[in-house]
Length: 202
Image (cartoon, rainbow, N blue to C red; front, side, top):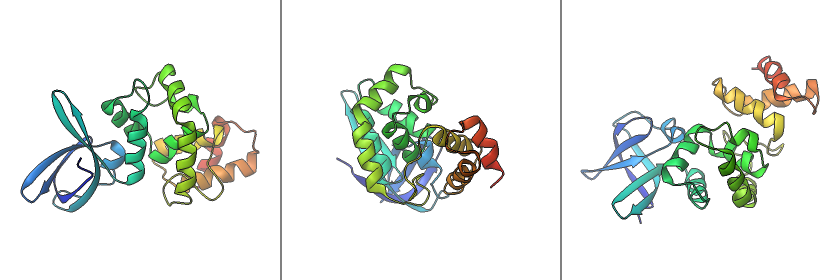
């Protein structure tokens, strides 16, 4: 099994890279999350990898960090989710946000991820809720992970943070703005009210 590769980033696209390792170019499938963390072509990179072997193919998937790789492997344990769908899911939301959705049983937020139907969302939360919660606890307070010392955001707060992400606002700024909005509007405010209020504090 190829667990990790280190080399020169020879080519890159939003879903695929070629890493030159000692003159051999490895083609690696990646998520949009990992693509956003890549340096310019010609720079050294390290990707954590998983080799998926099928009867007629061998496909290498690469990840920016161990958390994303672990989540990818967790998704493969869900009935109906294969490597390509797992890659697509991780392209639609950050690992930390996805863990929050699963751990909080937020099927509404999961259903907004392209490629996920109602049945698959239900299977994900049923199969992975406990694992996702444990992984969130182990991550702790990690910069840019979507997790802070105030605990994992859920419900309307999480939906508001995700909406800010789609507008290009990254953590921890997105979380802090939503928390401030909650202080002003109260815990019962819905996402539609929190989003414009949070934008005032960015």
